[in-house]
Length: 371
View (cartoon, rainbow, N blue to C red):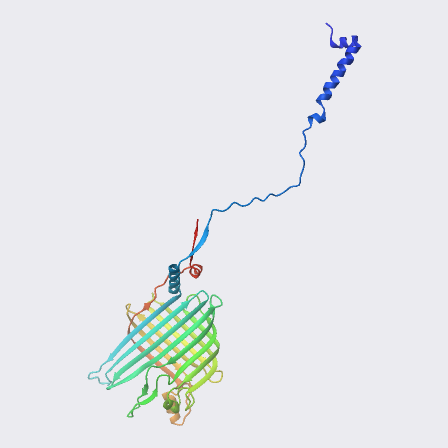
């Protein structure tokens, strides 16, 4: 059996025809124009901005006058606090066939202390009114043994956690006339309302720790005005002004220290106040009050009070006696001391504490709704 190769060798023309057909079919299989896919035209990159779809969320604000009043009232209660302490003490001393002698006496003392505090985030005002009035009945006469009032207000602006920029106004005087009772002589009128009376204005810095037990006012700039509004008392002199003068003004510095603390399971309370004014020329005047309270029940307590006053511009009985004798009074002759021990019936009326409210909520009382 003959193969294709033998056939090609025998017939030359047949072999030429076979090769031409083979080459044509191979060329048809590898034609680039027929096999390559057409290329898409290359263009510049572009950013297509599509319009936003309209939102279905609707936001609006509705102002409520009633809600605004409620929040303002709540803010007022939060910022304002007060403490009112009325007190009354009565003492009786009786003697019957007492060999050492003595006079039967009755005495009563009424006291009122009111403190109001306004506290905002940066600004605060502290207002205090403290007053006492006491009468004593002995040897058939009624005498006044205690009479004074003290009003003070202190606005402050916070500088740091413990320091404040503060101003102060203090007004001191008494309610009614006071008399001196010399032996075998008629009583002598020695003072009355605003005779003398003092008004002190100062500005400086206040230090107060977070515990609120200590409060110190340092005022390098202060003014003190002394009034004697009765002509007869002004002519006598010895009440802080020159003889015959009704008014005296001084410029100097002032220091005030207030401290109070409780111990023994809050059964004992100690309160002290120190106020001093120095006019840069004369020795400073000072008032130091100390009170120790022992709580027995919620309304009954025992107290011990010691008050000291030093002012060499006010004539005391000891200083006057030395002047009448032609001698010069010593500095301690101008020291005035008041002390008292007794039982007190007192009440404590205070505002209720309120939970803090966010200031932003109070400032703009608007309700927001979303759909």
